[in-house]
Image (cartoon, rainbow, N blue to C red):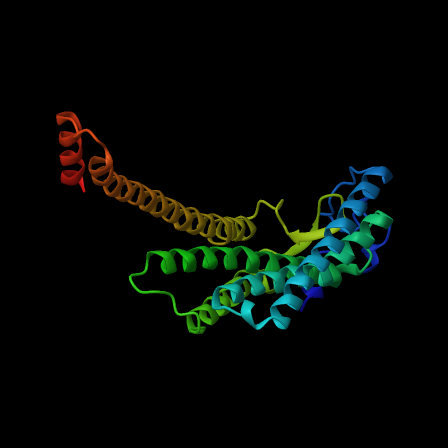
Length: 274
């Protein structure tokens, strides 16, 4: 199934071009142009090596701490662990292949490997983004809720994690079955959704993917944290006003002089506003 969705053959994945005379290292008529020099490929390889190594260590450390310390196993931290798992899988299942391809200046694992790489990276990347949206909405509901959050209730969090992974799967599987496709991109050392094709089949998928997997989660994140910031500012104003109202009567009793008429009017106005 994976091979059938690749528009280039394994024979075309060598340094030579396809049957149509294309010079792309991935072969096929839609192989990307090679606009990177050997130095450019080396720079990309160094960056990918750093990102992959640092990401693996960082996310592995998060998982180790979560498993070792029971105090960290709160419902909200389970969402963070889900994000760490998806990022760790990218470092294990995706980054090594693009790193190796950049060091050699060409894709190394054939057409089926390109489809696999594109699917895995798209799927896990969307999982992280949707999980961030779910996390922001969960924090919004927790802060704005009338009752105190239950630190032992994992049901909502598990539902949110399950939703993130299933939702991402639903949007990354279609290219494997004909709605758009996964193929080479950039200088030919990575693979992703076919962004370049102008067919109705491909454009419709790109538009849906862009809206439902980028714009919509972004709106949820901005709305949730925007409402939280607004609530925090309102709470700070209420706390400041309450502190002022407690201090003014105290100053009037401790001062040797009685408060002026202006101060009394100001205090009355504050009480009226409160």
